[in-house]
Image (cartoon, rainbow, N blue to C red; front, top):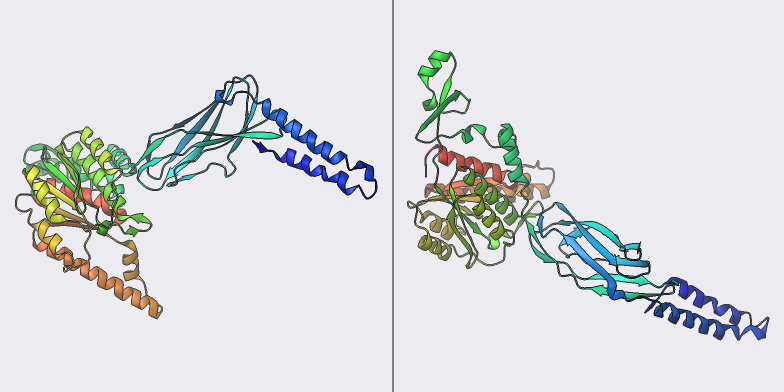
Length: 438
């Protein structure tokens, strides 16, 4: 039992007779009578409560959420009693999400045998699986003097998946022929394999060897040959979730950028009818999905990556790549998402990736920190900025040396600013298909 503000206010009024005893001593007896009456009224209000087991609460929330996208949570309250109930309600969403639930909760009246719906939104800021807590209710008595506190256990788990905005954007722009706006060259999606498919108008970035000179002479304008894309090839996404992917770029973990790019590449490869697989590792192998074809495989990769988190563990490339080679021996494009600082600290990683060749074609995907890029490009206005610029320039030079070491060993490199990573990775994949490198 909890007392309402009204009851406390009435309780405070009982002091008035005591204050008046100096003027009229005979009114002092009113105080105990007043207090006794308040206690009696509170007990009466308590015993007038209907059976609150008939007050049922349901939580309706999407089990699958998208990172950064608001989602509606509804709380349905059903009153199975013959009395209208004044209810104060507060939900406990996961700590990892942002909520627009009022700080004081919801307050409403549920009519007899009726229902009420309260709603608020949550926005997820991190991938993973999260759980809601209990729902707390306070039901006011008919006289408004006391309240009963209730707690309803409603276990609800939600999965926060990576944002698929880039995939949706790719699909929309591909349909409208505007992939250039997403940083992806449209010409590369038209196909360029071994078998002739059709003729089309020449585009500025077409290779000269693709020009059909006979058709050009007939039409009076440049015409290019278009070939069918090589299909049913293998793409293996290898994701390092060790300490190198733990840092953040502009407030977003590196691992999130890598996962978004990996999902978009998996989707594009599926459209090209390639088989796509996944390996996630740090000091041990955490997930392995052998390459398969179709959208079902993209969903399986999404399910495997939604809760992938970077850790402080030192990545063990030797064990992970040995694990991969023992289970998949067909030639594939191995796309490894990682990061490098300099040739010395990355020597073993470079060696292990290069060792996958010539059986596989290996591509190392790394993320440039935009903060470092800005620091390297800034104008020197003070000793502090000069120091920052020098350090940033040195970091970039060390990275370039590591990238050069990879390239010398035959490994393809996609070293891109985080916000352009997905587009540049897809472009490199399409380039591999065009040039028949795989």
